[in-house]
Length: 342
Image 1 (cartoon, rainbow, N blue to C red):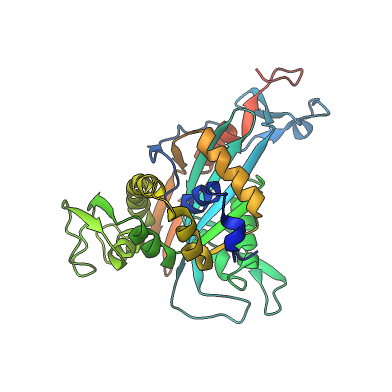
Image 2 (cartoon, rainbow, N blue to C red):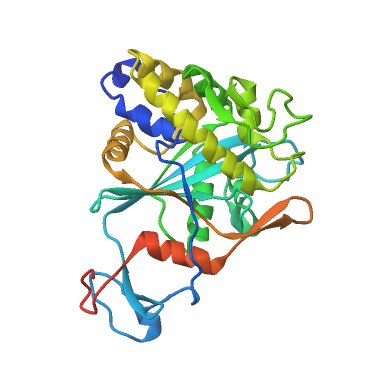
């Protein structure tokens, strides 16, 4: 559903804003953690291995240890959308790529939230939507392109959800929230600007951003800071992702301050409304946001891999072993042979 909030509904549900802002501010301690490399290939299930499994929980073996999927997990895909210019193929497409992708894995039993930031250039299987909007095959391309198939609304978000699930070996994505990058400048200015130490040399792109200087980003300068990569010394998406995490950490603090002001929540939601698309109802958003305010939020995890220039564009090839380890760490738990958690 496309958000078109009713003011009467908004009153009294300030928690919803926390989840809306998480698309950009993430409401997290923004840190990156490196993963150790796994020594084995994608784990095979107990049925594939010929071993017995509990009827309630399927047992999976990895590195010689029995695992089962954690119960009570809920996942939310957050997308930051940006427009691009280029050729339009003869299919059902729009011009919005998912440049920022973050999966929130919420463990209702442990009351924890684990965020996973995905590289938009990750090469993975993408579903093509034909001119009628029906599936018309697949291709291997940058993860960000999944959103370009469809109307730019729910169908494009659902196509991205499918691509992310495929990348994560079939892990289910329960909900999604997207915001266009146009909303970044708006939110940035709503909180009075965001102060950062400029990480890159933006000469020729935005001369107000001088590497090493501390600046307060306003309007289009905030967009330049979180969007730019072409023309910079490092044109891969890896450094931009680092810059985005830096920006989000600073934005988080500004959001906290602004949220104390009377009327900020309602005003921000109404202004950001047109930039948002989600499959969540108001109640679901409120519940998710409430969980994020009470759960222990972990470090932002990222996937290891190699970035290089492809035939036309940057391509990020994920390290499959590291990704497998990440999935086992986040979505699974060790169990005793009787099926109970160890």
